[in-house]
Image 1 (cartoon, rainbow over the protein chains, first blue to last red):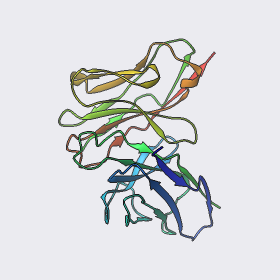
Image 2: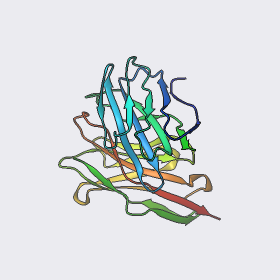
Image 3: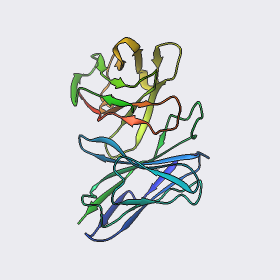
Length: 116
Length: 114
């Protein structure tokens, strides 16, 4: 079955370290997204990519970086510049820009990052 | 830019009672509208979506939602709640151009009591 896989499910990071969250999809979707979720804050967009080798900043991109070298993969790096990285991170994908059924995002099961 | 407001942070209903979760959006034209559900520690699952046509849309798990253009609302309803419906519910709005990501509300947490 197709879907999105996020790994690891739980991640612990020491202050000052960079860490990379993995997101892989086998849905043949063009678009991929990273959201951060904090209690009472809903989902806030970090970065998104509509096509391979291209990505755009979302609302809270500071302290994060991404790459999109392959259609299937959209890893997120949480850098030491991110002041408060402890959160639940969700990756999603969709068919792509301009498609009628572009929406109906498929979400991964999330990665919970804790800074220790 | 579009925005979404979910006025209720937390709602508690008795099992078997009816449910209505509110969602108001702001957008200059008719948007695409969605409801998602999230169980603790999990990703989001699509419940239903409105693109066009009939303003009453049916979704999975017995949920439905009604698009009311005059009120800029897309409220989620269920006639009889089950304990397994306890979760967090998110409303989302998207531009018809498809060029920008969905914007999500802050969510409504549903508790179900016996």
